Length: 171
Image (cartoon, rainbow, N blue to C red; front, side):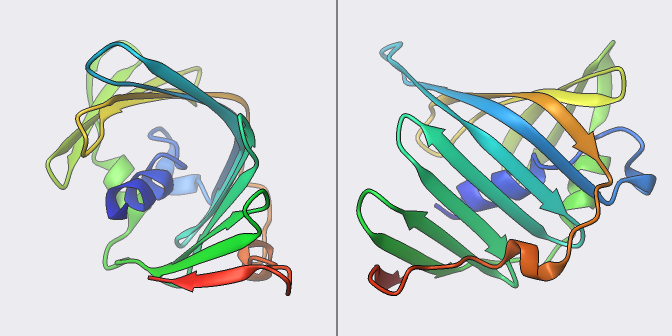
């Protein structure tokens, strides 16, 4: 699960013109394919902002939100009426991780973090996709659309609002 949160933050950022990038927002489609070629598709919207804040709102096939801020990840699952709160390691700068991506061909960059190789596609200065294998050796592809850069956010924008009737699980 730790790698999921690291990836969610890392892919929230554009590999081009990073010096001037303060935030990134986009719709996304995420496909996960296992070794038996079974695929599941998720869709939603994400926002990220320096230094290390992110929100991933999944809307298909189920609603779920993941908030990352202040070395903590909160997953809110309305269908289950629960929130899962977990401390995460934020000892490094995710913008720097993406900045380290090296161009291997036109529009294609690669970077490695914690033994995982990420392939990024950047077209017209926009991050359009990222591909990697997760810790279960599943192939993951995330395609971004309707990208926006450098919108202004406040830290409070990344604070989850957990309904009082939800169970809170701390891990």
